[in-house]
Length: 131
Image (cartoon, rainbow, N blue to C red):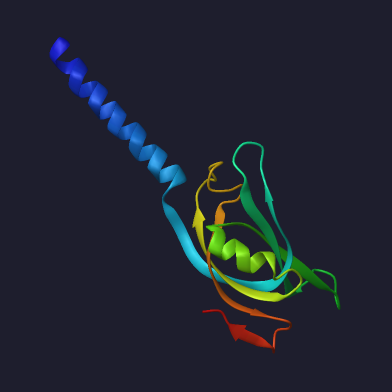
């Protein structure tokens, strides 16, 4: 019986680490979203993370003749991304992001984490790439 306790504890530990990695570090999806940057701020009680909201326009509303906007709430990865977004409020931006299954406090409050800014412009037709 004592011979089985050691391997069982190790197996349980490996399973727990695997589940933790799956829930919090596995990248479920990657993509690009574009829209007007509504707000961008640094907030949090213990871990201060950059959080923002992108408003996407042009989505069809269930009511005839009306348009409905769609919000994309995200966290930003790193100060280099945050520095550009901090100065882009109200502008049209195109963002590359990663989607995780669950947020963790030191990464941000959202499952969506922006990793790169592709474009920033005043309007949809006036975009220029960020290098």
